Length: 409
Image (cartoon, helix red, strand yellow):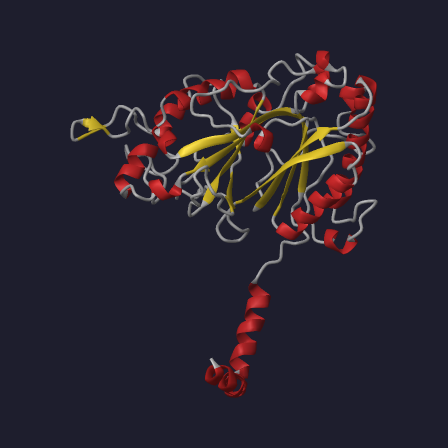
């Protein structure tokens, strides 16, 4: 150790000197490459998504690279009236702060205003859980479908850790610094009225890595989200028309499921068995019946006397049985530090999918599909739902209005 420690600094200084001299001889080339990269590389930090409108952003807008789902419970020392006042105060602050942050301006009580200067397509989306209605005396205005999902046989829910909350913030952006700052501002400025329960952080491909029309992949390597709604379906299948609850016109429902993946056992499968479990080719997402990713699967196709797409495969179980069973999906991966299990063993990963779906009616559109998947989906051997929640995503607000004004009026 003495010899190594004594000779190391001299060697490092000599190496650095020689390296610097070598780079000096190549200086023109280095500058040319650097200049070329800066000239060609696009900068997206100042891109803005409009906050105000009939609908909240963050649902049908293109998904940015990062998300924070933030679950909070309302806090009040009084009864329903005080709880309602707390909710009204939270929505007032969030509307004002979100409008500024999404425009690239600091929030009103922003202690780090410079962190707000690069909005990077940040969106702030606000949802209410069942408790926001029952605890505030607004039960008669709660959407019919706003209740916990059934307890499925595959669920291993950690409710205290990842379960239902009174309110939800969904904060998306292309820059994790922007998201961290927005999360801090939006939660700190209402700290006396809410209690933070959890933050779930997710990611997709970084912006510019691939064309935004390309379907993302989850951490099992699968193309994830091939079958999805297009803009022509949003009015009829995503946005509420106010027929049952007039105040809710322009809102939607959201299901958030935290799905853990057992990557260690998944990776023990050969690629063919992985494909049979999914029903699609891993390489390009095409159905095993042939064609390309977005071609309709042929569930009657036979190969060597067997169904090309097994009846137990994920896509076979998930396919709609009617035109109603369709919803908008918007998934993000998560990859958190591994945690010891009950026996003290530490797995090699703590990864999974933050699955978010948006639809006009959870009971009619989402629940039947989830019931089939829970009953018998080949992927259930490697995936476990550990978190589940349902929210009413509030209608959008126009300038001068507050999110949820119709509910509280």
